[in-house]
Image (cartoon, rainbow, N blue to C red):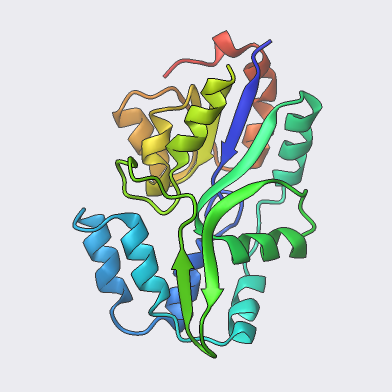
Length: 223
């Protein structure tokens, strides 16, 4: 039986919308959209983009909390966590998003306690915020605030197979390091174009149904 380390994105994967985008839409000062365009064009890395965008937020903690509390989650995520734990596999949330929001959303929706790794959101004024990136890696080819590939390497170092679950650009790089990807959104197209082993999913209901195939991993590791 294969031992799997499951690395799961948060924004748009566990949560039903991207937290940072939601906050910027509500509270972002002019300039954050231009930063997004710079990142998508490849002129700045995601860590620099996120740090500068967070500096554009103009919101009190109470306003931020209210917006975060309105964000939903995939209702089947708890069942997926239970299924993974039944087989003794490791599951970690790895996100290029905001640690404060992840913790608050997990608690609000009474989701299972899980290790999670993300950028650190800090309030530095009544309505100003700063982003730190404790999980950045100078070798990260995507210049991300969260180097998900580093977590994949650690899993491989102890002999585990890596399952990545994600939905977008922050997962493109690590998808190439995984044994298998459960892909949503634009990650499906990326995996298809790069011929990476993947299974398209619409949510964690699909992921739960794939658990038996993971146990017999040879039957699922195909493009």
